[in-house]
Image 1 (cartoon, rainbow, N blue to C red):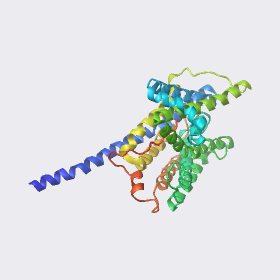
Image 2 (spheres, one colour):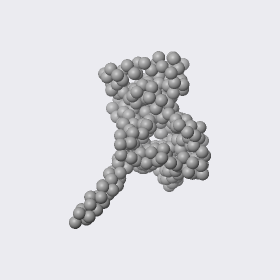
Image 3 (tube, rainbow, N blue to C red):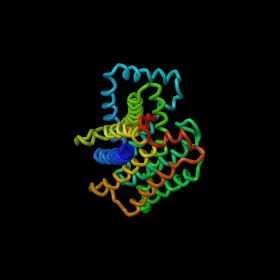
Image 4 (cartoon, rainbow, N blue to C red):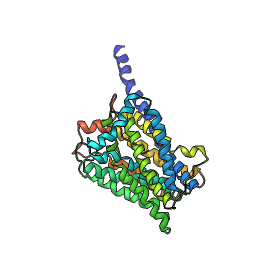
Length: 348
């Protein structure tokens, strides 16, 4: 009797744990859909204003305003935020870390400019493909991690598949060079995004708060975009207006919600499952948005195929090589109860 009871007690937790992991994976897939939702909002905003650059300023501005409301009332985060310019002047950490927000600015700018022409699915696939290649390069050069990682067969295959995925999703636009050229924007944004988490993480350590790092990220991106827009405005190449539709201001808050959810879910799933589930959410969400919302984009067979190839590229590129497998690697790539990994910043 005791043995049976012991067996029952012993057997139930793994089942419960598996079920809970499945639930958290589902939540992560849904959270990953916030990325294409943000792209759709910023794309519609750019079309409504007739200026993707101005749309990116509105998106960054709404996110920055919300973050300032969060951190300024608290003495500790307010002081840490106000101390960052002094750290920049003194060179406390290498200065490029302070400008990681420019990477997010490029992505949000490309959303305002390119989503209307490309569609959300093509945009997200090109973005993720760029991020896969960037991740391989950053790992090889030890950018944001402690040790260099060799160019394993898996990583090379992942990078090649990322390029294949991009070619597939843009193939319907081969006869329209102008539209085809717009794919460079999300792809370049993805290449830059691989370095952004490292810069944000270093600022977070310096300020002892990731909330402060996120706010600084928004401030830098907003300042860069606004300065460039003021130059255009002074030259007569732009005009200023704001949208009348309330939901067009949600681009920044959607990015913040994505960051918050990923920070919560990473301790439950680990980095590997989180990355795969969120990537799946991005790709599934982008195809659904293009399919269900009129005027967002056209979903071709090659669009879906390209999205699947991008997901495979992401999964294959994350397979650890035998040179980096071990206790430290396992801690990074698998979920452990009570694990506190470094937060991986999402784009604003």
